[in-house]
Length: 199
Figure 1 (cartoon, helix red, strand yellow):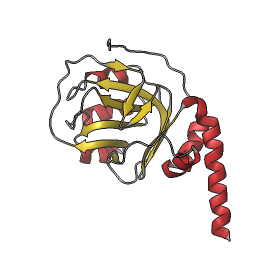
Figure 2 (cartoon, rainbow, N blue to C red):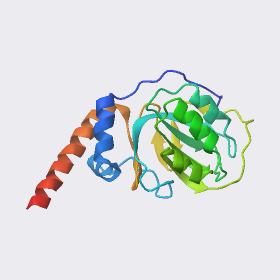
Figure 3 (tube, helix red, strand yellow):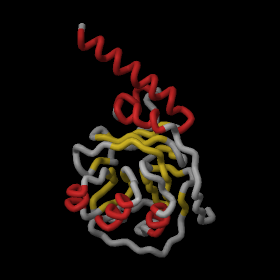
Figure 4 (cartoon, rainbow, N blue to C red):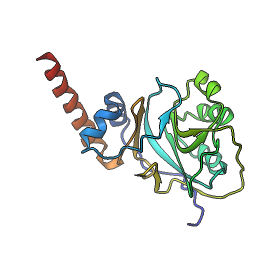
């Protein structure tokens, strides 16, 4: 694939993103027909992490975080970076300085099918992050990749602008065009569960 950086993407309505985030990963996954769930090896770095936002997708070389830096230049506040690599990697591709940069640009969180490092410092920052591994292995910044192209992250297709919901149960992807219907279905499911509880 030719390296590409797409600067402008369509996003779901903020209200629908908020509704999906309030419902949580398990409810959204079930409500949209048990689809969109990333593989269970993608785990939050701290148990209280929660996020809901629009995906800015990043495709990196293994052990190379150049394109994460490029993605930070095109994000909007509330976006979630979703990072995949062109071949398997568990190297620590994201650390405290990148987390600080993300916070400064309004990034809501990170989902990465690779490794992260500086987890104590990032937890102290309160930056929500889900990853495949934790590793102190350093990375390079030499391999051109892409930003805001369709990717596969932890076994699930993610397009730029899709809604990402993350919590202690993992991460689920809602296609951007399906966000209003998925939010309504998730709320209906929560209401049904509440009626069951009351009975």
